Image 1 (cartoon, one colour):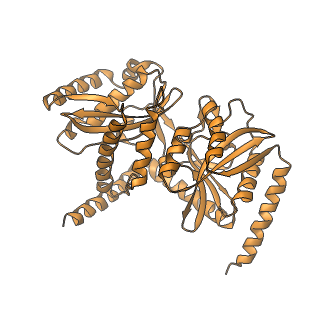
Image 2 (cartoon, helix red, strand yellow):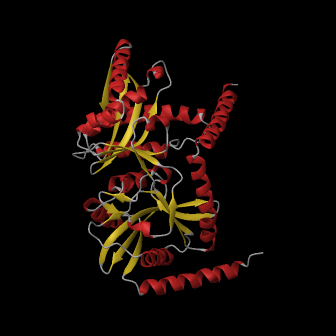
Image 3 (tube, helix red, strand yellow):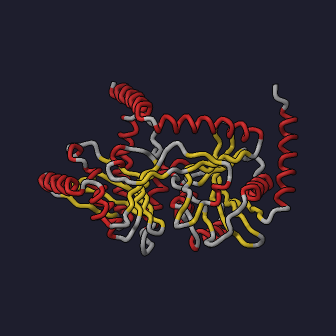
Length: 405
C-alpha cells in the first residue's frame, strides 16, 4: 500500500529542490493564466519570431474562445529577456493532470514560439526553469506532455529537443517544392498524373462541370467546413474510430479560425475544395508558416463521384497552387497513408516530450514511453498496421449495421 503522505512529502521536497536549482540558473520561467495581457506578451514573441502552425496567435485565440479549457502561457526568460513561450491547456485523463499544447490532437507539427537568434538553452537549465515555474504556479499539474513536435522550423532547431524525448509513433510525409510543380511531377510520374488529371476533368465536366476553389468569405468557410465535417463523420464511423471533429466547440473553433484568417493579407489558414455539379466532393484545410504549407485535414464525399478520385484531383490542384504561391514544402501532416506516398518524397519524424512534475507524473511518463514505442512499432509494420485497420473497419461496419437495424 502506498503512503500518500510520504508521496506528498517527496513531491514537496522535489519542488523545493527544483526551485533552488532554477534560482541558480540563467533561465527562469513564468506561468500566466490565459488572458489579454498574457496573450499580448505571447503575440510579441510568436508574431515576430518563429512559431509552429498550431502555435500561431490566431490559432490560440480561436481555440480559447471556442473550446472550454484552462489555458496557460509558459514563458522562458534568459535574464530579463523572453526567449520562448508555450501556449498550454490543462487536460485530465485517468486522474493524471497534463499540460499540453493548446489544440489537443488537432495540434500537429508543433514548435514553441521562439525569439529569433536566442541562445539555445542547456537541457538541465531548461528543465529546471520549466518545472519550477509550473510547480510555483500550478502544483496540481502532474506532467508537461508536448507531442508531435517538429525538430526544426525555418532554419531554427527546436529548443525543446534538448529535453529527454522519444520519436512520435506517427510519421509525417512531405513534398519538396524547390523545383516548382513541374519538378514535383518529374519526380512522381508526371506524364501519367497529367493524363489521369485530364481524364478526371472530363468526367467531372460530363457530370455537370467542376471548379477548384479556395474559401473567400465566411459563408464559404461555413459551407466547406460543414461539408467536410459530414464527410469525415462517415469516414470515422466506417473505420471504427472516434470522430475528433464531433462537438459544437470544434466546429466553432475551425470556422472561426478559417474565417478570421481571411482578414489577413496572406491567410495563415485556408480551406480548399473541389466542386462537381455544384456539390462539394472534396475538402482540405491547410496552414502556412513562412514558405511551408501543412495540409491539416482532408476529406472526400462518398457518392457517385468517388470512383473518379476527387481527393486525388484536389491534391493535384492544391500542390500546384502551393508552388504557384512560392512555397518550398507541402507537408501532408501526421499519418502514413497510401495516397500521401503517391506524392511525398520526404519523411518527417516528430518527437514527444513527457516531463514529470509529480509522483503520478513520473508513473505516467514511465508507462507512456514503452506504450509509444509499441505504437510506433505497429505503425511502422505494414502487416501489423494493416491488421489494426482491418479490425477497426470491422468494428465500424458492425456499428453501422446496428445503427441500421
